[in-house]
Image 1 (spheres, rainbow, N blue to C red):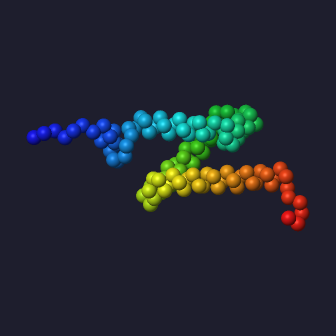
Image 2: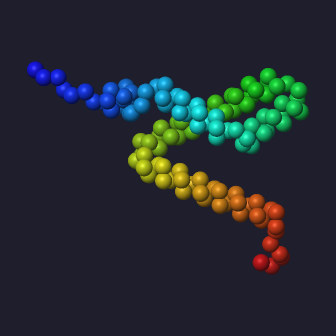
Image 3: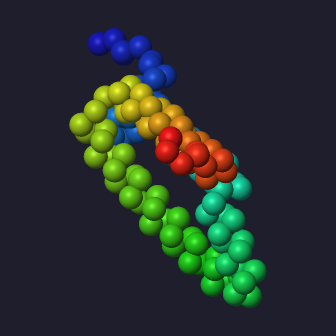
Length: 120
């Protein structure tokens, strides 16, 4: 009996049959979320709440619970969407949504900074 050829891609699949090992997925997720959260509204809100309350440990645990909860919603929604959509479709939909949100928020900022004259 001959042995099947070694296949690195097959060796690098998890128990769920998806590519990537636990450590690589974890590190990629942690790095991406950490960088995405730097300087965003959530971090600024935690900074202000900590300064105002004088209770940084309480603010840390409250903000951590909030981030964990919102991440859980994202993970569960992503898991469900992966059963209904192809990964490529999901990527495109997320891209379109991000562009649409950016345009909408940009429009809101422009309208707020320079309101249109009455009657336009």
